[in-house]
Length: 301
Image (tube, rainbow, N blue to C red; front, top):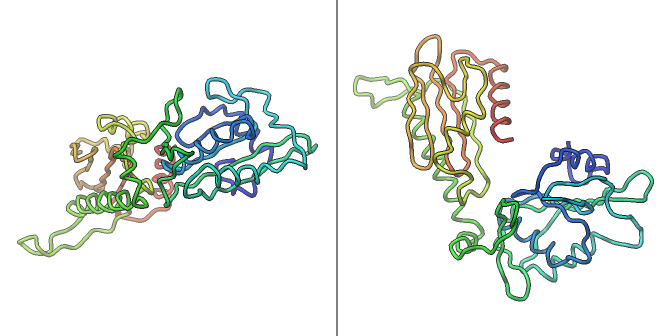
């Protein structure tokens, strides 16, 4: 619930419910017990998230091995303290090129305890440096070291407001569409030069700023299997006997042959996290679209 709620609508109970799921810290999630005594460390976390994929920081959480530890009460709340002002000050003082975050202090019904939720955007102004040494940090996703110094090539990648990432995203999508279009058409002349494209439904998702690998190349097939549903005409990956499976640059490509009553469907997954699926339509059914979306939620989740 908390992940889908607008920041300003979050409640104390939303945070407690989220912590009850005991999600470990990762690329996009971090827990802090307090702010005042670890201002520089919080600034490093904010900057590293802004430099990587964005993320959420929850203040008032006691954790053990990067997993929230009960009781989930938060910090003692007082009207005399201003956590938001503290966060804004440390961003200005410690982070070069300030990061614009969303903030909400979630107070319990008794007014005795609270959590602060900081949502950090995936920043178009990256890279953001921290401290007097102007060090650049990124999130690693490793439980033993959530932040690490960015390698020189990563700094170069971030330096031009992520223009290289935007160019990569554009190229990945265009290449996938070209592969898909080569399969989803009907030749209209003997030479095959004139084409009429069959009606189809295409769903694609890709990180806003793709850069490094999200998973290894050889994990692509496994990732697709994790999103599989029981075998039917829309199985992921396609399971009928007329399926072409081949490696492509950065990932895997699947395509089934157009045989009645099963229409052609094509999908692609690459190591940068781009997933594209096209299903050729004989008839349009909202049920099929709903199932496609459910599969994408399972895959992305």
